[in-house]
Image 1: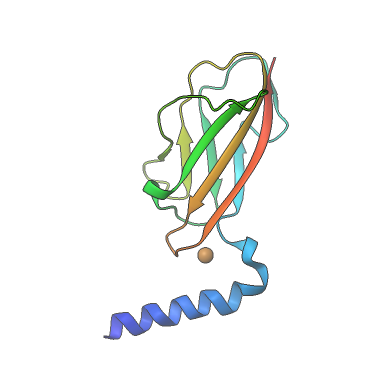
Image 2: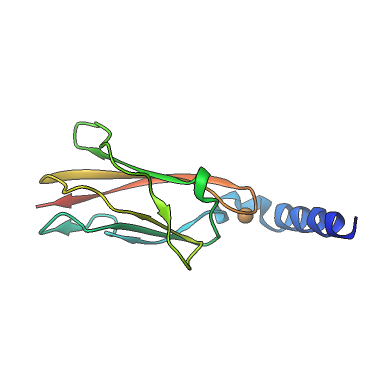
Length: 121
Ligand SMILES: [Cu+2]
């Protein structure tokens, strides 16, 4: 019962404190490759760091090419030891523009998503 009330309190606190700024949840803090990057070679990994710990099974990354086709590849993983980081090891990416689409469920229950693009020369 105590635990439950603490949980309720925390949920309420999170809601009250951040309700006016819903975008403060699951914010992308750092991305590699960065948005707008122009790379000489295909990136070895796509690493996205968020401001909150992620629920691995409900957080994902997809890549689409310039034509909007979704690239088939293994699912993104939460990086071991870094619950706020999602890591994707893509196959070799062809030259051109690539769009990164991410969606997250953070451990406090908030969903968030976004996209950005980079280029491979
Ligand atoms: Cu949150």
